[in-house]
Image (cartoon, rainbow, N blue to C red; front, side, top):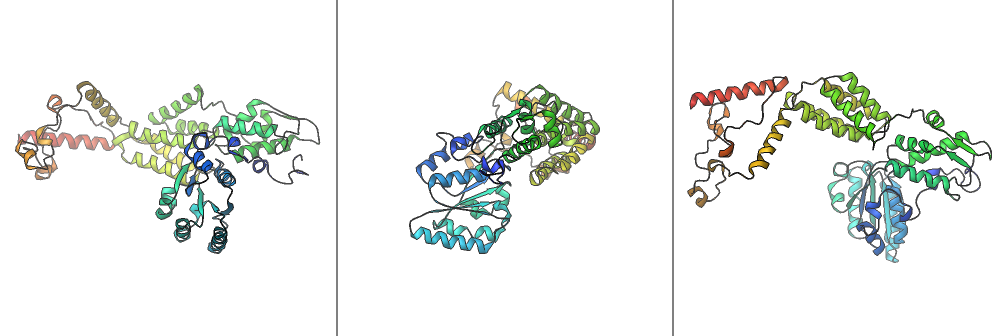
Length: 437
């Protein structure tokens, strides 16, 4: 097959197309664009130690390579999966020798979250004494997976997954590059093929370029021109192209159908729309965020566990990723769809906001005010406040709203699920307060 011979051997297309400079580094312009702090620091020849946090294929390794090349330092790259304490010690010893000779060392640790606490702590002294500049890469939230002492000595840089447009641009570059890419071949690729690959790659440039290379190899016969159709892409990638433009109308139609199915307590339809979105390449975390919102807006206190389930599903997906991350999402969708529904909290807040905007900053009742000094007590702050724990049921029945909104009701619990118990409790407490008055 072309590009597996004299020039490039068996080097995959994704590796050959790795950017050689910041100008070729597509998709992270907010980090390395002109005038951005990281770009300025690199151009000045000095950067702090870094933690690069981002999804697979977002460019963490590439960014570390570009920084090292720009700084003209000794670049050492290791993987936390394959390396141990012995390897790190050898690297540090060599870095100390180079430092004595006036040459700096940049150590890049891929998947740094795979190192345990003791292994991560081993870098601290060498960072502090300037033996190395440290760059760690992780797909996991560094707040949870990187020990605090190491995290405090590094600046966290967050990389985003590539947009579909960005992936298309990267693939077009590979198709036209005669030196490292596929530019020496006569290739005719339908535009929707690149869009299809991009949508199927979940922001991962390696996945997109790997899929493109597989397609070329699938259709290439000797030196004949290569024609790639959408049907070829569907066959090779084993996935059907779905009508789902994440930036267009169908995107909003499908997410709307998903939410409305859960709201209508229809788990079957909710699962179908979930599958439609995930199979079409929707960002699963976008779906998870919508589920968290739904759990509060449409279920609320009718089932207070719903938001915990939704958050757990989001965290589970973040921990697992694809291809298995759909499993906790599907579980959460069926829970949310079958849970009792109430939008009382949501509606109550909207009413409260309306009054805030209409009446502005109404005075806090005197008995509700803080009174940390004698002067404030003398002018009546806190006077007459009823301490709820001194009353039966922990309820005093006092008025806590501004005078103008006295007795106003915002939260009206529904008669469904746990909220029915809340409603009964509030009615009981109010009746008890009336009898006392």
